[in-house]
Image (cartoon, rainbow, N blue to C red; front, top):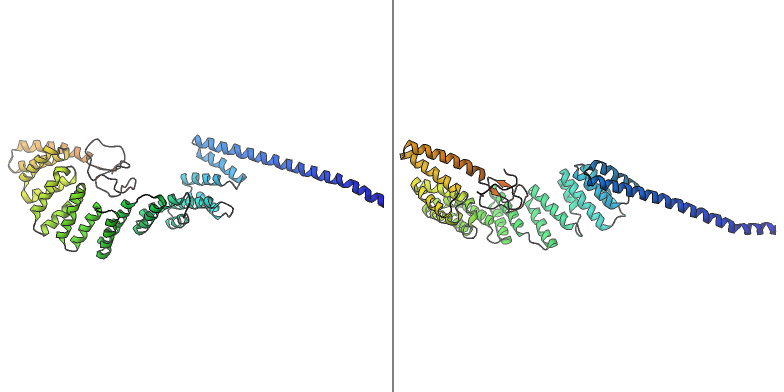
Length: 403
């Protein structure tokens, strides 16, 4: 009996040794398997990157999906796939990937914030604005807080939700340490314009005051303040406000020139108002102000006075548009008393000038080059505020789209 127990004791080290060898063998097999998987991942990753560089996104996505299936923990790769799907317009697949990341408990807070930001962009691309807002509002701090607020600000402008846009712009100022006063003033102006349209005068007045607090002597705010005063039957005060536009921002006077003249007519001071517009032409003779002034001087003082005004303008601010107006005025005078040959010559000249000025006269965005026949406070091309020059260009046609 003692001999049997001694034999078992002698065999115990052998069993331990066999067990250790077996564990080492399993570990070696596992390491080889991991190495094979890593090699496969690396090959698939490099293949996917190579396909992306060769502009073959379909095959690249297939290769990267295989890598993600081999290693579901690869967070950065999931972000890459989600962005690729969104760029290709496959927003549903992008949403699923980013939702999966936001629901994971094992990722870092900064990765969860990143996923919430990307998910918000997915929803924006899909047109699901309420869900985009909810997702982007989850990103309160970190690297993606600023781009999330910028996306929210863009979304609120698309929705024309100016009150939320003001809040987002104010929060962006704190995050960026950068002024957004111009945008905030414009948002208040949009609120004021909506209030004037529905005749809510108290709301309009408050929005205008807020806009002027954001940017003192802001051109659009002063124009709207004058509109408010006219609506309140206070034309004299409206003229005083618009005089500030003429003094501080004369290039914008063409936007209010007709209403300026209407207010002076209401006070029986039309000649005085017209004289002030004519005085402005010494520095603002290019663009619509010349057209409007020409119209009113023709109505009040006749074609001969309009001709004299245009001759003076051509001496200090010669332009094709002024020349076209002069030809138009002289044609009117010739039709009343001139010979038929002169009328025919002026008609031909005016036709050529109008073709040329119609093709060139455009407002141009200083940010993206977008050209338009009418003036916009916000560029339809790039959505920047106050990017349009208030003066119509008459030179060579710049690059960029037009409307």
